[in-house]
Length: 292
DNA sequence: AGCCAGGCCCAAC
DNA sequence: GTTGGGCATGGC
Image 1: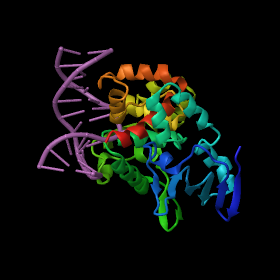
Image 2: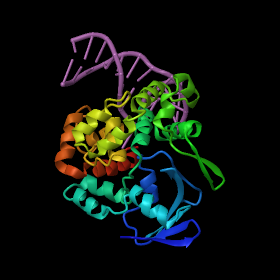
Image 3: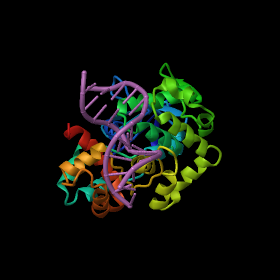
Image 4: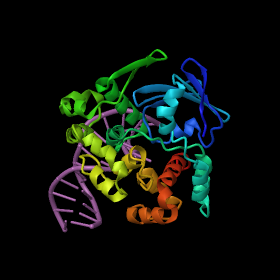
């Protein structure tokens, strides 16, 4: 169990951190509100807090966080108590593709993001690209999220509540340039306002197929988006999102027909079992590097 | 310039 | 139950 040591006011260090590389964690497509700074550190907002993190050797330095912040939030958010070394070893056994993927993304961790934020973020993500998704998510936070404390001279905003987005009309979102996703966001927010967000979070305790069925009941949430929400927002690690990059790697490196999504899913369940959510993330990050 | 992007909806089989 | 056209927009 690694503990936070206070270095100075609002600055802590976590010692003996393994299987954690900031570039891997924040650039592997799971989150959209973390940005790389000129010095190589990363700044992001989650849970109403803003923090800057930097990895140096086996130390993780966190600026704008107290030991209490770490114990009550960031430790959980960064999934610090999970042994990713064991996961990587299990996934790599007898699979040369996975072995390379794991080496390439050796410091990936699956963040425990807020479920509601992942619902809207991955609705926005559909048929788009990561730079544009980040702009859309940041824009919706800046326009409709609660203003938080400034950090390093820049304004920070929380992700907006469902009730706020539920009160909008599509015209309100048009300046964010989200395209046809506007009505998905508003309809889903209206369905989630009130008790819906609590029910979404409770889907973390459902079995995977019940959770998927419930999450897919929202407008704009199909199989791929649902699996991302489950994996990144509900800790449903048996999810295996199949986007265009995953289809590429499954066809080019595992020999599947590009349209055989069923076959890919069944293969993942069989080969990677309960760890296939982690497997998917190593493969996705790998695919984006090696498959042009 | 034109293709593509962490796809989904909906109608037509 | 499956398939395919249409979809807003910007990154590259």
